[in-house]
Image 1: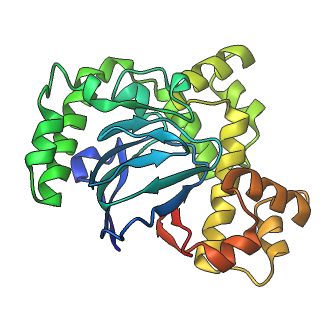
Image 2 (image 1 turned 45 degrees about the vertical axis):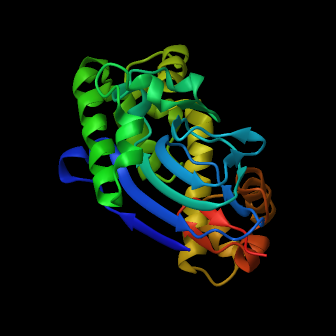
Length: 271
């Protein structure tokens, strides 16, 4: 298994958080099993499985797909030789880059080739025919730039600011204060945030807090689990463990024992 995480092109940092690649050799009939965690941001994936298929839970995934923010964990499995190029996008990218209502894609995905009809009608074919990973990344990056330029007018600086403040506080900002600062009613704030980010500000805050605690586990930056609970402002250790299981699918103890991550938020459960 070969994996790599790369920084975004300088001119696309406003839209792309990072780029990742994964190559998995064929392993007979044994499926490769991965898990994804709750994350308040969308992404774009191009995947090729030779003599096999890739599924999320029981749903077969298309070769090029755009997914929305995840509010829960999911199971991926694939057979055959697998090659993936993935792009982690910023939370508001579904709206500002692709012109889509983010709330309609939360916890699901769409065939992205249907979005490339006008600008890059042959994008899926070009990706398949491009042998190098760098070339595939350049194609996807160029398409993102074209889509972002086209949808520039859909940008909402207030929602971009709100998501940035919540993420920067690791989910511990006072949402009422943020709403007042933006001079929005509670209803308007909720509606616009869901349209741009894909979920309510409260749920986004909870996921940001979970992601912060997950990062501490990754970095081994704690002495005991109660330290993580305290530093991320959970009521107590039990509350932290329940929340972690909700968003990861297993407890922090299980994560420590059995879940080496291939790429951040894409873990492989090795048997």
